[in-house]
Image 1 (tube, protein in one colour):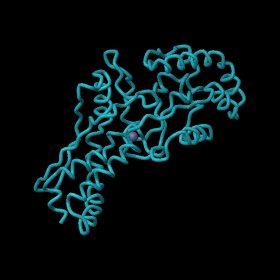
Image 2 (spheres, protein in one colour):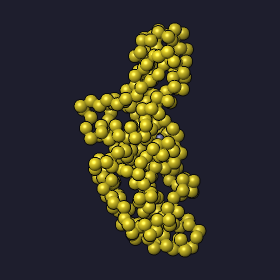
Image 3 (cartoon, helix red, strand yellow):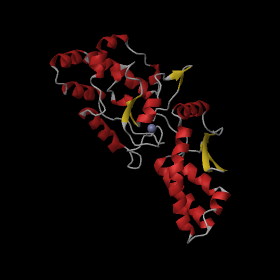
Image 4 (cartoon, helix red, strand yellow):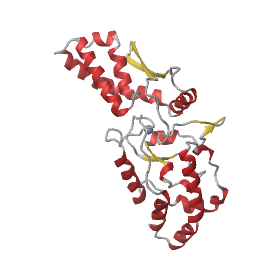
Length: 277
Ligand SMILES: [Zn+2]
């Protein structure tokens, strides 16, 4: 998981471009008439974005009257959103630009509306409110942003993730073969409210279980790579090779990248290593 670079251009220009592309004259006129009100809302969004408090924004009932008009501006397949995808993608490191950073498991297939578009149609095409995501994460996102005043999901345009390890994998050998259990454990160095937010994000997006399922297919590939290396190298050398690989991968994909966590757990497992021979 890595923080993404957010849209750096003028969000109102983006809104105006989207309106300009509308073919339906009356719809276009109604949307144009909203421009000043949308401008105010976008200013409010940007102000809360700067202080990382967008959850404080309340839905504006005025826009309920124009909800269908506003929602007509958003479609993942539309030219304007594809343009945004390309713009955002070009700002990210090549290693992460195509993968959903909410989970790091699946390619990007949609835009997650950070403030849900049904409640906040005024922000349905605000680029600061659109986070590239997979459909699974998007489907797991609830309409509630907060619980007891606390945010439930990471906003990876804004949140700084800890540099130390908090995701761990347990390796289990059963009669049905190998299995894994991912869990979170935070050291005292990690801010408590950030730890709570990360834990909520992982739980609500079902990340430990989704990582376990993805590990099943990845495990065979990883084991085969190590078994091939083991023909020429000692166990100690194989472990060293994996340690060097995970250090590079963590730099590219984030300190708590699930594949690196899994690989480290495996090379620390005596049974797994003994079976490489
Ligand atoms: Zn995802």
